[in-house]
Amino acid sequence: MKSRARRAAELTLSTIRLRQERRVLFAEVVNPPFNYMVGTMVTELRELVRAVAGDPSVGAVVVSGGVPGRYITHFDIGELSRVAEPVPLLPPRAARTLFRTVRAAAKLFGEHALARTPAAGVLAVTRFYDVVRGLLDSPATWLGMIDGPCGGGGLELSVCFDIRVAGSENAAFQLPELSIGLATTVGGQRLTQLVGPARAMEMLLEARSYTADEVLRNGLVNRVVPGHSLAEEIAAMAHRYAARPRSVVAAQKRIVNHAFEMSVRESLTAEGLAQVVGVPAAVTRVALRRWLVMQDGTGESVFLTKPEPWIQGTAVEMNPADAGPGADSPYRG
Image (cartoon, rainbow, N blue to C red):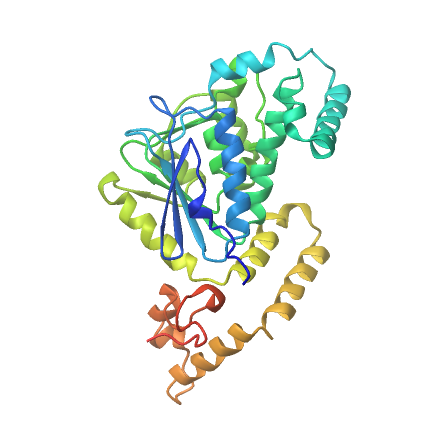
C-alpha cells in the first residue's frame, strides 16, 4: 500500500506553530519575546512553503504573530550583524557573482557545507529568495494577519502574500533598511507593484512607522479590521479562498504576479493557456452544470440571483481529490 504523503500541518518547526482547520492552515510565527525574524525562521518558512505546495489538503494559509502584541517585528539586527562581519565588502558585479555561486554551490554540495563559512550570510539571502518565489507560485492562497509591528523582513515577507489584513489598533508598518545602510532583501519590487514607485520610495526613505489606515490608503493592505474581530474576519476569508481549486489559483497567481514583467502578448497568451487548460477540467465541467441547474430555467445569472454558495465555495467541491469521504461527488448540499 502506498504511504500517505506527509501533511504540511504535521511539520515540526521551532519558530512556527501549525494548526489545520478543514482546508485552512494557521501558522503562528513564534520567537519570543520580540518576535524578530531569524535565520532559522526563514529556513522553516521555506520548508513550510514547500510542504504546502505538495499538500492538496491545504487551500489557504493564514500567517500571524504568535507572541501577544507582535507580528514579525523585523529581522534580528544582532544576528544580521554577526552574519555580516565575515563577509568582505564587494563591488556590485562581484556581489552578483558571489550570490549566484553560493546558490549553485548549495544545490551541488548542500547548504550544510556552506553554513559555517563566510558565505553563510549570502546563503540566508538565497533562502529568503526561495521563500518568496515559493509564495508567489504557491497553489494555496497566503494571507497575513497583521496585528502588531510589521517591519523590515517581516514586511518584505508579507508583501509577497496574496492578501494582507491589519488590525486597526496594533498594526504598524516600517521599512528601516535605508536608515541603517541596507537595501531591501527581497520585497522592494513587490512593494513597488503594490503601492507604486513614489509611495514605495517614500516609505523606504522615511523609515518611520505607518499606521494601518495609512497603508490601507496606499494599497499595502487589503483591509483594516478592529483587533477584536480580526481573527474571525481573516478566518472567514481564508475558508472562502481555500475552496477555490488549487491548480486554477496557481495559474491565476502566475498571471497576476508576473503581469509587470510580461509583455501584453505574453500575458494574454498566459491567460489564454490557463483558460484552455481550465475549461475542460472535470471539476469545471461539474461547476458549469451546477450553475445551469441553479438558473432554474430562467436564464438569469446565478451571480445575481444566488451568488452566496459560489462566493462561500459551497456550491461545488472544487478540490474533490482531497475532500475526504464522499469526495467522488463534487456536489454539496
